[in-house]
Length: 614
Image 1 (cartoon, rainbow, N blue to C red):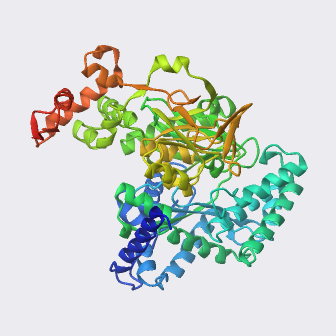
Image 2: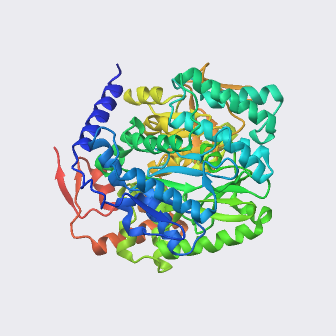
Image 3: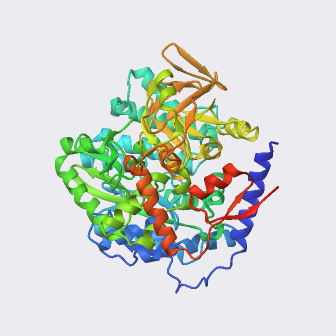
């Protein structure tokens, strides 16, 4: 077994012991295990330790009057109880969940499991610290062979109903029943079934499939689940709900979640909450849409409305990169009323939360709904710029602004960039979306395992995938950059890359990736695993071979090779460093072993040499 695999298995075992050993609170019925949001909201943003970040912010948005579909949150204490008691639930949870469902039924005027007009739910995880892509959502829960017919009749839209059903079966089959790719070279099985059907009927996109095609897809998905698991897809809606709740708690201790927590220092005993929320639908045709937006540009911090959306789609289509979405600015032409409302919400969120927000929305037949908001993940440059500019806008004071900037964000302003002279001579083979700025050169790899292997040898790599999923996390950590042929700037690859400070280019649609043959191609150009490429996350360009780098703007200013007035990045850097000097209590000295190191440290603000070696 590879060393990395042994390390991961030890980490998983240790994390499970930590959670199981945690003492839980009283199991009496007086403990409150669910909190509602909607017309009655009994939580708020201050309760993130109990409700998780997502649940706390859903409650807060409902409190300030934003259009939030009603639902309820199962607390993080249940997750702790779950692991401390052999994956069993406290006795009071079942009646609390039924009360939560009944509350939503009353608000919506629909019944969960009703064959004529069914109430449907989404089920999502939500830890107190955001873990994007780590725990998968389940949408359209409550559909079965009977309720799908009721939904079709009620909406007079059979295609919409069966589109929701096939999505639900796919998500539930993947997340709850474990029907997934068995190795990194294998295509995701539900995707493979869909692509096979699309090829048979001559459909280019999933939106080209008609109702009969979707019924056939549902049938094939059920066969896939039966063949892989030996079980039938569940028809009882409460069985579906409890299966989804259990899957969220189970996902807290899966390998990718543990790796992520270890990287960012998130304690295993915090647990995750579960959010059960009324479904709203972005896939009801051309008057419906779904999207992900940021109140500012998460790549460079510019104060512009930034994001993506898809017409006639559901949320996971945008994040998973199934289709390359449109820039949010285009929504002003396609749905001007919804766009104007989003601009108002953008302003309201920043003023209320006093930080850049990343939020998800759905437009159902021209009506806008907010599905979540959180402090947006951002690059190092963006973290610095947002802090400085929000201070100027009086949204945060200097001390708060400094605390909002991770130390590694400052370091990212000092890393080298591609030599512009060399770039002009390099061969650009494709262009994608600039999802994570910076410059990266490395060997092409197509799997997380290969990225880790090359990294263990000291080699730099670029992880190349059609689209990334949470299973690729280990490879993303080990790589210098990420390149995908599908997805947009709010896809899984882009979101995680920005948080990690990785260079990322997404949606390079001219690139074809062949996992089985370990190669990718652009027209007549074939690139094999192990060949070198270079990617520019600022421009979205992809180049053959290695490109040399030069000092960043900040380093060039410090070295006297560039005027401070010519670099806004340096001006941001200087502002933050002055703030840090103003509020710090420790003196800073350098550990230098050479005159060059000492000179560099003094340029960066060191007050002297604290340690040196002969």
